[in-house]
Length: 292
Ligand SMILES: Nc1ncnc2c1ncn2[C@@H]1O[C@H](COP(=O)(O)OP(=O)(O)OP(=O)(O)O)[C@@H](O)[C@H]1O
Image 1 (cartoon, protein in one colour):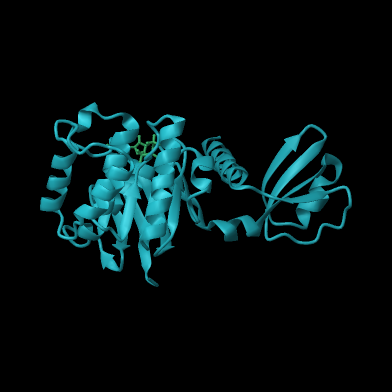
Image 2 (cartoon, rainbow, N blue to C red; image 1 turned 180 degrees about the vertical axis):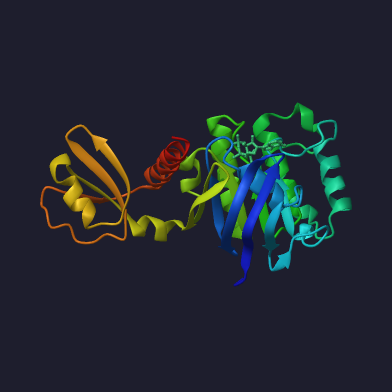
């Protein structure tokens, strides 16, 4: 797999007078596990709905797996699980699998039944009688049986308790290990994505704030912490993205570190959560400045 799984160029979607997503340009390489992060209203669901063709773009272009997105173009290569887990509650699990088989050309029953048997989820039970965690697992089994090249999950664990979250994430990791598909999953919670994802897209207020390979992003950024008295001097020599004042000390997020010739300053790596939070703080400050 060398092609891009997702290419968006100036993608935008307006709801009435308000933009849900605007000027979204990104290219996600195939085979990655992509974390789509952002606070409420950031545009995550809008982007996902555009990806799976449930919404039409107001502006721009979108290609999935090398094909322009349009009616019926590539959807049989894409599986989507929405926040409600897209299941019929009155169907038994087996009936859900039958529906999946009838509706999907690339369906492989064995993938779903093996997974559900391993998890001890009975095929004869009605979906509405399963626990939230079991329903999520059934939705995932159905999505995987379609043998997707691109699997998109909108906050797959948001409604689950911590144990069910962990199980769902483990199932996803195992599924990824078994097949070379691209996975996109959204969450508010960065720590949830850290174990699973190797690619990051941060959205806020309908705009892409940060995108890239997670290891590269962590390598490119550093936190410099030192005395407030020399903060301006140090800042002048660095590409400072964000400054946080902590009483007599200052913490600077920099991209592309240059040598710091002052022993009172400490340089340290950022973790993913800090990086995302700093970018969201920057975004919020930018919005305040625009509003002021
Ligand atoms: N159907 C709609 N009609 C009008 N505005 C909408 C609609 N759907 C989304 N929006 C607006 O578009 C923006 C982005 O919403 P979206 O649901 O994509 O964000 P999100 O990041 O998925 O949020 P959440 O984490 O709360 O689910 C928000 O301002 C939201 O109010």
